[in-house]
Image (cartoon, rainbow, N blue to C red):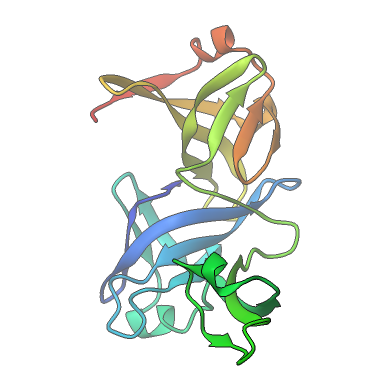
Length: 204
């Protein structure tokens, strides 16, 4: 299966959202979760992103993913963003433009929301913002994973490279990757070697 980000996601009974992050174990190369927006759900769930297990994916196509569950079941998946409230010792004018929920009457302590991504232990989350770095410099940004449907094993990583008017999707085996972080995928290859990898032209 080719599972990408910013891809429309459908449940058995209709549209539920778009994929925003893919979460996998970088040591075992196994996809574990997808983070899916809830813009296809009724209020008040529309602004949440939900953590869906990889086993829920029934089919994956270039333009859409289909989950083997109903919209009601998807709505029960855990939110991806968890909000904590912390006290800070800063003056009120420093919080202009920030959401302030509770403040002390003296103005010395303020309680502000802090968002935290609920990434399972040992996992890394990649998105369209994740960059791809060759041994000698930047070569593109993440696009999708090639995954075995049976066990979720990732065999290849696909990324987009090139200029706005001439972009290509490049496919690279995981054996040519040194390591992955949330903000970047690091390759063993240099930029010249990347140009010789299998790729397809895309319309922008």
